[in-house]
Length: 232
Image 1 (tube, rainbow, N blue to C red):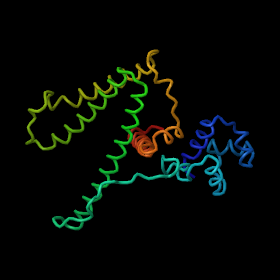
Image 2 (image 1 turned 30 degrees about the vertical axis):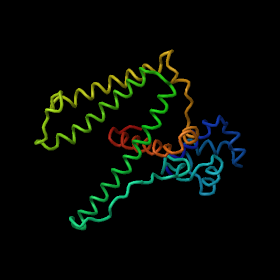
Image 3 (image 1 turned 90 degrees about the vertical axis):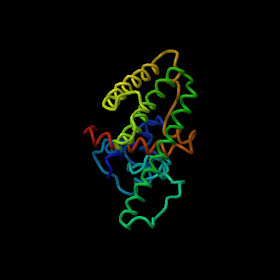
Image 4 (image 1 turned 60 degrees about the horizontal axis):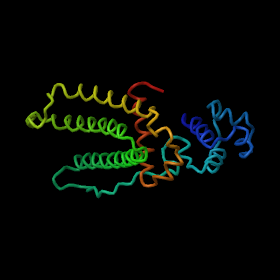
């Protein structure tokens, strides 16, 4: 059973403000057994997996941590990506096609997630928070572009005012500063961010077109962060 299962079923219960006793009764099992499932002490069978998926109205894949979309939706690619190229060998075309798919999927995930972020910023309507988060994103995109741009040493650097040897460190420092200011702003009494209620169900309900993108971004980001940092 996936290590995510225990965490997810616990989260779903608490999200709905249900007690273990209530959920256990509804599912026809003992509270002690449900507690073991939520702690990861015991693994459940297929019948219980299906029952609890129906109970919380989510997919089994979601419960197992295979997708961050509660209904198991997958990101669809709108762009028509060519499957072959007369100028490339079969192996090269296959690699290019694979890269195009990854780029198209990641593009859709990022854009969909940004749509939700900026919609929330409009709701919160804090000029300071909008500025800090926008500055953070500007710097991140700027740094990504310069990494690609600078790969070819023949590309002219005169379009930039920050030295090519220094921009990376400046961007990192600026992004740390702006994210810290953004977090501080959310704690300000004049900022309404704390009043915005967000849960998986609410995100899926209010942002049906972009929720899957955000859920997949969260899942992918956390897996990669844990992998690179050894975090839990």
